[in-house]
Amino acid sequence: MSVRHASVHAKWIIGRVIGTKMYKTAKVRVTRLVLDPYLLKYYNKRKTYFAHDALRQCTEGDIVLLKALPEARSKHVKHELAEIVHKVGRVVDPLTGMSVEGTQFVEPPTDLPLSLGEDQTLSEKLQELNISTAPSGADSPPAQNPTS
Amino acid sequence: MPMKGRFPIRRTLEYLQKGDIVFKNRVKIMTVNYNTHGELSEGARKFVFFNIPQIQYKNQWVQVMMFKNMTPSPFLKFYLDDGEQVLVDVEGKDHKHISDHVRKIVGKTEEVLQAEAQAKMQESNPANFGPRKYCLRECICEVDGQVPCPGTIALPKEMTGKYRTMMAAAQEE
Image (cartoon, each protein chain N blue to C red):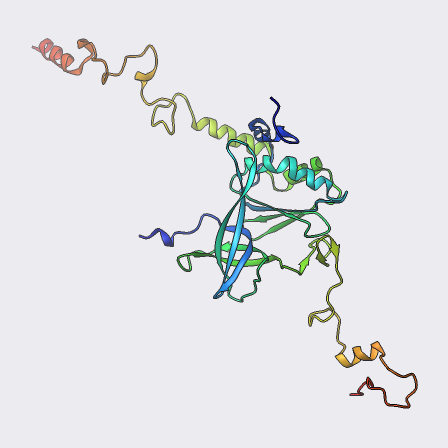
């Protein structure tokens, strides 16, 4: 009976993605605090895990939550991606729900297709901007808005 | 010769054992997001500096991770076994306040801890003899004042089974 198919000790772990070059697999570095026996101080000890990422959502630098699979998927992959806790570059503050950059709040990017309540088409947005080169209509201004 | 560092008392076994936050069995991961500058994160910074070693010492199997300067507001997050997550806002709070709050929501209560300590004491009953892993002594021959081990010192003739059966047989006839 090979030990390889036994379930893993760590059921839930959090780590940082360090590599996504494998097919639907994320390489995740997990740090745990380990007590140095002489200094009696805690230091981070790192370990890499491979996690199955079926939708290829991870990018390098994400903080992810992994869940242990009931059975090992392959020799090294024993976990799967449960949730991306902090997406790199698009961190969302859990208390306010706003996107955040370091210690500053950031305006959510307006060109996202998922922006709330934005039903305007691109042409309507351009109309709002009200661009025109000449005040009078002697020469047809190049940025005349199409009335479609 | 004084110890090295800012608050070297944090690096003593006595201080680590004094920690009283023991997480419930369901808690698997603890995450602390805090900032290195700013008044609002001061409590969180002190919590990380003073209380995290105590917590990790008492909860060896919980993964504790610290994130610095990721969000403007500091918070704690606990990941429980069934996928449940507990979010704790620690903005502007004092580190004592934070640790009390944490103990109230995800820590084992005093009664549970005492019951566990009692159960542990009952398991290690000095009246039991057995393998070293479970009991203090293996055989009564180890105790001072008792009959020494016949493996090392021969028993007096009157105590051996062989002599006794011989005497009993001689008595019968």
